[in-house]
Image 1 (cartoon, rainbow, N blue to C red):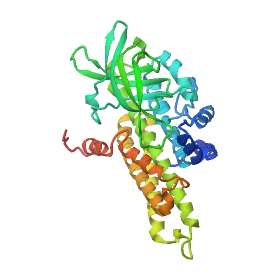
Image 2: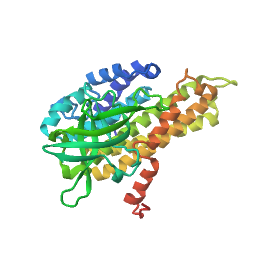
Image 3: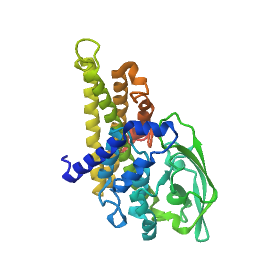
Image 4: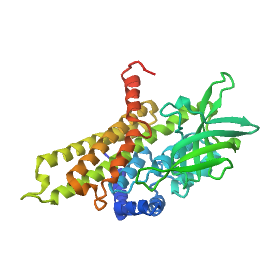
Length: 383
């Protein structure tokens, strides 16, 4: 794939912005319990956060491919913005594709500018990777809805103006529960949150949500009540693509730090990077990251072209490949630096936990292997 001149310019511009902030800015925010507000605000002002959203609502009119470029370059400089995976990629995409005109006017301009943030609530404590076991329910009451349930590991709820919640409504014909998407504003009565303590160095916090008879207006429902599953997956494919971008950026950062160290670190007469036992693992990680990157942009290309089925397969493969490449890249980078790889000075040790997140979220590597074995290879299910 040959990157367009516009995308190369976007990549260079975002890289320039990211390098002005860098890993130290990110680490300071984590250490002080702050958010990366300055970087988020400047990225929004420059149009990077809404590059995938429609121009008529203040976005860039491009696609997920361009948004992935933004997150990848931020990550490669050591200052990724995790909420990009959620706010413009999932929530912005779902509302842009399926929202009413009023919902688009209400939410998209702010999401594009970064002045409004939206979280995404799907994961539940007892459902794990089985979305058919979601127990958050929405029942009709008059012209509106009443929402009840719990969600866990929901990123950025403390800074989000609203949360796009996946609930289930009852099909009037069959009585079966079907997924639907609802916008819940942060101050809605009965909508509570509790921070989940995490062994993860990130400005974005994780939360448990409790919805106790949360009353919503009728227009809180996004899209068609009978097309909830289609609309849900329209948001999950960008989520996987953006998680791949997050992981690839992280891997690139780790390899770059290790290469810099290996070029200048002398123990014998030549730099340690001259030794194949040091050089080859880093070269291998570079190759693995580039291969994952190709699949990520193939997934983005398919998604932006409207091929949801093809994008689903490619997005899962990209997320899998990027997570594996990032974990290996961080491990090899830390090993290259030896004891220095575990110091705060070099900033690699905190990536050990962060890289593994890409293996388990938003979907585990095993569920991706299930997807490929069933959907692509045609093998029978075990569940």
